[in-house]
Image 1 (cartoon, helix red, strand yellow):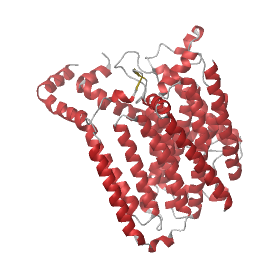
Image 2 (image 1 turned 180 degrees about the horizontal axis):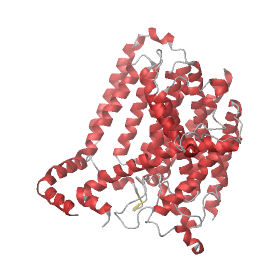
Image 3 (image 1 turned 90 degrees about the vertical axis):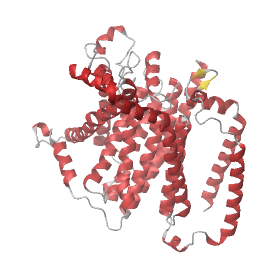
Image 4 (image 1 turned 90 degrees about the horizontal axis):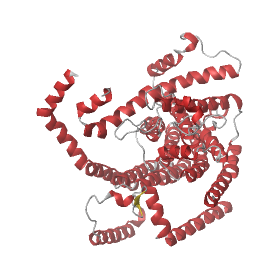
Length: 199
Length: 359
């Protein structure tokens, strides 16, 4: 114990400053640092999707973007969304994409140019989208960078948890849009089955 | 004033609870728990299969073959690591990591023992998140990429077919597995793994009894998810040589195996947590069985022992399956998944919710 006490004393006089500084910096800015890291990953992944000729690389980029966005949800204390994003988009949908891509004959795709014949249309659509998003971006007040995380777990004033909070809002305030979306999905599913039988 | 307290004093409480404590727990869990368990699980499998087939099993290296896994690991470590010329290099290297990584990450949310009685003590799990159960499902889906990428990047028809088969199989069986978990979730009313175990103690009943159908679906789907007999079609040697890992050798090949065994342990541990009362002894509310609490041991250790015992039972069952059942045909596998397990698990959810609503 004597040696420990000695070290304790040493830490108290000079070592403490360095330790505490690192700790305080990480707790104060760690979330922001992680945000920029994952945001960079998301953007890089998204760029990979549209620039790579080989579709498998594109799919891998899309997966990276999905997972980075899940991490961003996690940083905003939306644990439920993060996990659902991972296993619905990252797990289910991307696996199906990869499945199709691997079975398609890839050798034909090497000749295609990146923008094809539609680059004028693409340019117009892109500019429109950038305009809309820019407009929205300027309109919305994003509030403080780190709002109260309690908002994401409160149900009627009780801290139940993030999944309960999501369910509470989804099935009470947004029940109609939720049900409409599920009808759309059902229609799409039936359509896929019908198309699949025709071939 | 145990050794733990002196560590806390040494680095300061903030740093300890923020970084050091999880890091130590992860290191202990991995290097003292899971990795040795996996190495010896291989030996146990060979021994038990030997017993089932009236053979001796490995018995040359060390007493009862106890040093066999160490010899195997040494061999795999020093073997030449071949990457085929026409393989897609980055995917070929990444694939085994994608199989092992998620399987190990899942252990972060599995409670191997009880949370500490007083606040600030030693909880016997890395973290308890509100979406623990969903996290397990999500990580398990990531592992599919390892198999697909491994199969595709090898540039070999056996690998590609094995990879595609495994992807189809895992997507098909993720659905009933997820639905079976939902039914257990309805009973517990929480997705936190710790809360689920506590809910079973409070109701005085392992969830396997009201959820026998759910447990059956979960475990069968789990066997299919981890590509074990009788659902080991992705690596069916009589049809596909070795499936997605045909072109792999040395340590990368070993990583695929590590992933498979880690998945077995994950499926068993989640089954124990969800359906068999986690770290509690059988009948935790019956006073007459209090001697099973093993209260002479340090706090929490009894929980770890009970948890491990239950997990071992499942691991034995896995190996028992392998010694007993012949392999399914691929169309039979798909039939079983889509035409039986998914409708059954949906019905199970319906009746569970109905009964929960009526009671």
